[in-house]
Image (cartoon, rainbow, N blue to C red; front, side):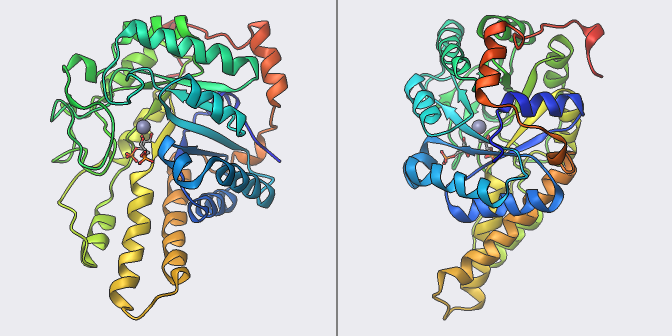
Length: 361
Ligand code: G3H
Ligand code: 13P
Ligand code: ZN
């Protein structure tokens, strides 16, 4: 079994200059697809579950499913991560169910819709860090509010996050504040806001520097060269998947996601965890539509789910290869949670707020 913490995995990724996609799952087919892709290219894995996924699949089912995936692929280090934890209890119960990492998203209040202030964020994130580190688990925090720079905040149709307009400043993480936040909370990874948003409708044109602020990633990495950065809303919404979806009766208006080259650029500047959900959903549902349209008499769900799984597997594999994750699973010797806990207690894993001179540019 190889249940790994986010911290150990991202430390390895930083040491060897690669990024790790974090794929969301809700069901068995998505889990099988990710692990099949990982096994094919020897990639370590981050599987993340949102609160929605936990209530859809049920915590017991989800945790047993992950155990099964581990047993099927014992050679693949697997981090199970809570995506967008909204309060302490969400993170605590995730840990009870075997998650080795949690995100405490204190950029929003517990309703996951209202932008929170800095002090609230530091407070709640620090409490979760303290709790998680006692047992050796990792914590991702978020500073800045995810949302579209084009629309001034949360106007995505299918995504979720802040509701209504927020200021331009809130939509871009402030690099000075990021240094303070990491120092104050001791998070293991930091999600930053730089113009990405959840869901399919991120940009209404090919993104340039005005609406996708890669310079913010670079600036934060210059000030925090030892902190693992996380890019949320990192689906690329590939044109071929939009076309496949629409070809078989789907109605998705033309949209643009985050180009893979920009993610790769981010990885060169400290991005270690890359969150992807929408692309997997789209790959699967485009495959469902194809079967439903081409074979209208079909009613065996497996005939829909198998091509959907294959489509998701191919997408995951491509991301493992492009982000440089491939080839690293077998190089990692998993450190137990109890050993990680000892290291936190000794201070060995405290954030190192480095200077530019130490930056791995
Ligand atoms: O954070 C956004 C993820 O895509 C999860 O979405 O809450 O619909 O499962 P969800
Ligand atoms: P996408 O909607 O771009 O896939 O982002 C997913 C995400 O950030 C999950 O936390
Ligand atoms: Zn997210």
